[in-house]
Image (cartoon, rainbow, N blue to C red):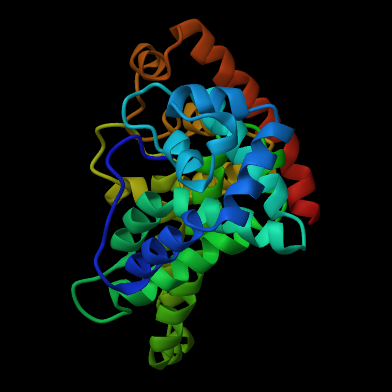
Length: 301
């Protein structure tokens, strides 16, 4: 989820202001010292110094971001995840360093935030790009400070983006539903067609599922038969299990890619995951068992 490409630069608006604020943070000697101390304490300083060609005591927020957004493939996923988990662990606190850690997390996630924002914009009506950008950044900051992400299995950046997108989708869905209040009178009619709430809920589930990679590769999206109530219920169950840590992102894909109108062949899914068809089938079987076992607790809640 953390981009290994050229960073996104947008002139003006919320993302432009974040970039300007970031430049000031990078120039602050106290911020650099804090970042260096964090990396040393987490025993990550030597690794980050090695991939950024900086001395340990010269490491600061700019070098940390370079490690999180490597463009040459020199940084491993393990190092990226370890650095991000360290930041998220500190962001869960209540002091000034927690706010700084959360701010660095947000900066690292800007490419994903821009993508999420663009995905929620509509050519007419609704909020502007900058307004949704503010909402997305606020959601990322709140999720980073929640203290939940760094304890979950799987890639922390993917979990962070998923939780943030679900918050944004929920807020936008509520807003769109409120704008459709004049349709509420239709609930008194003998019409079984979905109402504004159902459409808003389905939209939020499909958007969150897309961000989590739960749509089958090569599919045209969650339209037609894919948008059936049963399919939406399955996606919602998988998303909730991923959020609770019951399923990893790979577990969720193993279920969602298989139980659909056009299942991804196990050999193809395994190749995409870098494993064997047998291992992929065993993962799916275990994931289904965990999801099934979690259903009674979910119903009781």
